[in-house]
Image (cartoon, rainbow, N blue to C red):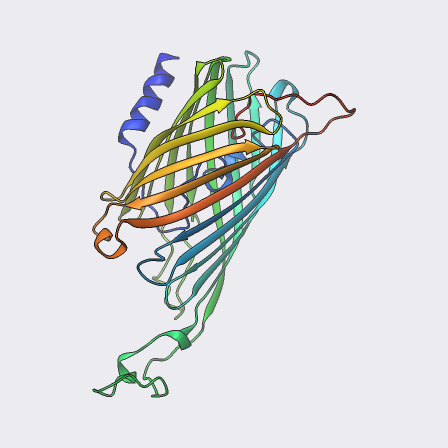
Amino acid sequence: MKQVFYIICFLLCILQVSAQDIHFSNFYTNVLNVNPAFTGYFRGKYRYNITYRDRFRTVAVPYQTVSFGIDTKTSKLKGFRKIIGYGVLLNYDIAGDSQFNTVQLQFPLSYIHTFPNKIWTISGGVMPAFVFNSLDYTVLRFPDQFDGIQYNPDAPVSEEFDKTNSVFFNVGAGGQITAKPNKRQTYTVGIAGYNLTQPNISFFDDKSVRLYPRTLMHAMAIVEIKPDVDMVPAAKMQFQGKQKEFHVGAMFIKYFDNLSIQDISGGAWFRSRDKDAIILGIGCNYMGYTVLCNYDINISNLQKASNGHGAFEISVSSILYEQKKRRKMTSVKCPPYL
């Protein structure tokens, strides 16, 4: 167990990440976008999550991203052994003046196995995807449309546009290991790879323009510091081509014996490619729905234009349980992400 603890500490301290793909600040409940090995890895029957992210609104045309995921598994979690998880993940992103759209329809599939001692659990997953990209050239401005005095939107341009959309197949895969030495501590580390097919994303049939593979490593711990308070440090790092990013911080969860508001949470994180943002988050579990709100405070060189404003993100998730007979409802201390 000391080795596992040292690994987690190491990841929390030095994780460096990179990404040009869609990414989110919340990786606690939006887990299908972190690693397909999380598919079906929860206590319950069905898990739903929807996330909305809005960024760069004070700088230029806002970049908006919506993600919706649902996953389940072949059997109950009893014994937590040899479970097959499966689901659907839909991501939609629109970015920039060209209204560049990305639609990802993904089908995560996982295998989960807990060893007889019930301390160690391993899981692995794959996530085939169909991706649709499109953009609108008509809303862009070109040098040919400036006559030396003013901009003329009706002026012809010399640019040639072969196509305005592309469709391609993509694949991601990942694995993770979880150690639960006692009821007060849980540790998880994992790694995932995306864009394994390195698809061609050119709008001009240029075979050299491909989507770089992306590697993501993540670590999370759940540590009980009081009977009704958990500390959840977490980190992820990813890299894609020359890009890299690390994301590290912690959340605290206060539990209540209340059916309406079962817990409240709050935390702070630091994300950096080169001092990118400080992220503040707050959330609660209300009537079985976990709501997390994050705000990115920009601290990069872009803050001169953004005045420190960054991104707003909200995520709502819920887990449904299967019961053969009705029973009295009680408040349960159970983080929704494990």
